[in-house]
Length: 368
Image (cartoon, rainbow, N blue to C red; front, side, top):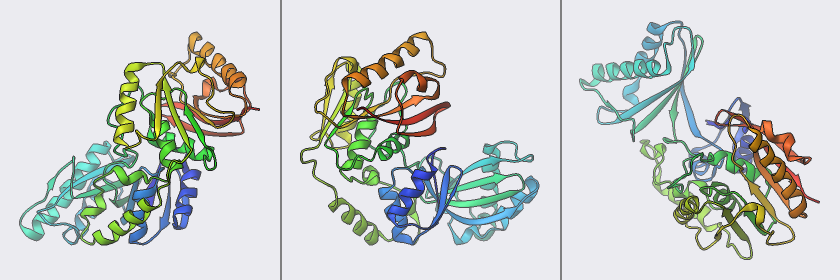
C-alpha cells in the first residue's frame, strides 16, 4: 500500500506507520509505501493522523502517447473489479508531454473502463464524482503510469468534526503534525492562544486522549470492496475505542479575540464531542495570563503570502509576549518562513512545510 501526505511530513508519517505496525516502509516524496494485511488497512484509516489517502497499487504500464495509455487501460480486466451496477470515479495526477491535462487523463481512463465493461457485459457503469463505489487513482510521469485503488475515498484529513471554518482554515494534517512534533504525552495543560475554528486544539485533544481520527467518518471507500469484512472492522473499532483515555486532570483551553469565530469553534468542538473536555474563552492572547506554571502553548497566528510592516511588528510583539509571559512553558507555532527571524527565539525543533502556497515552519521553543 501507499499513504500520501503533505510535503515536509514524510518523516512524521513513516514514524506513525511504524508505530501502527506497518512493515517494509519506504519513504518517498509526499508519502510512504508499506505492507500490511486487511486488518492493518482498516486500522490505518481509523488511527492515522497524517495520511491524506491510502492507495493499493493494481497496475503499472508504459505509455508514450495517449493511444498507448488508452490501450493499456482498456486491456485491464475491469470486469473482475466492478459490474455495470457499480459507480466509479478517476483521479489523475502527474505530467507528461502527451498528457493534455489531468482532467483529460481521467476522462480517457473512464472511456477505457466503460468501453471494456460494455464489451464484456453489454452495459456500462457510470461515473459518480460524489460518492462512487470505487475510486481509482492514476499517476502519470513521463512515459510511465500507475493505477491504484483508492481505499480511502474522500481525503482523510476531512475528519468529519469540522462543520464550520474560518477565513483561512488550518489543514488538519498540519495541525496534527505540530501536535505530534510537540510530543504532548505527560503534560497536563494545553492552550491554543489563537484558536480560530479550533483545529489545533481539537487535534491536540484527540492526540492526547488517544481518540481515533477516523472515528467521526461514517464511510471509507474500502467498505465498498467485495471482500470488506464488517466484523473485523467493528472489532478493530471497538478495540481502539476502548483505549480512549479519560481527560482526568488535563486542561484544554482555546481562546480567540473574535466572538464570531468562536461560534464556529464551539460548533466544531461540539461535533467532535469534546464540549465537556475543552474550555473556550473570548480573550486576546496578548492580555491573558498562563493558567499554570508549565504546559504546551500552541499558536497559528494570522499571516499572508507577504508580510507588511504591521505584520512584522505583530510577530516581534508575539515573540516578546511569549518570552516574557510564558516562562516555563513550551511554545509550538506554525509561522511563515518570512516571520521566523522576527520571533526572536531559538527553536529546539523546526520542520519546513507548505501551508497552501506559503512556506512555513512548524517550530518549538523552550521558554526558560
